[in-house]
Length: 215
Image 1 (cartoon, rainbow, N blue to C red):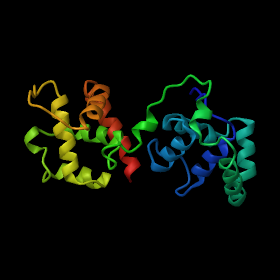
Image 2 (cartoon, one colour):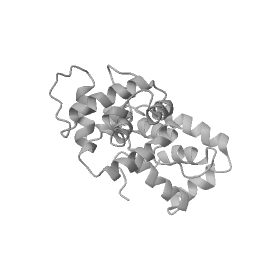
Image 3 (cartoon, one colour):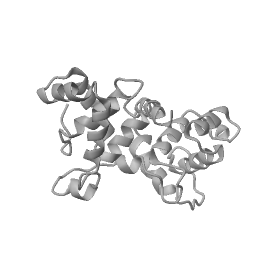
């Protein structure tokens, strides 16, 4: 498990704070709390998820010290975590990325889309997974699977159907030749290029993990 270049040992405090939140223990890879911390630190969820294993096993002196200092003193942990967050430069990506050669897409994937603020790219991933489970005729608002996904993501079924309609233009097997004018076309095309031509089982597994973010 390689350590992310933006990781700092100071972040063990924030990770422990997350770990101790009820229910105490390892947080799911795409749980809302872990993703929020990832966005705050500009470190992908996968890296923080892996760091949780190190934290749980207490396999370095500094981690052992963190546990001894804070595990039974949540007030001190919260106070020092708040102080860390208030430090100059904390949470400022330009300063964090200065001189660091990294390319991340996860922050954009979890950010609202400009023309569709109710949507995030990860939601397009989940809609694409459902797209492959339906036929064009069942890509309708009254379809139970469409309604269930919309309810999970807290959007209207109409919006799920609208995205699916755009995915039909991206689908090479449908050979749609009519004109599509939608600001959803480019983001949907990007998601299709990333996941639509890959193993559908990988997409299905990823979409299942992403459900944790909406629970």
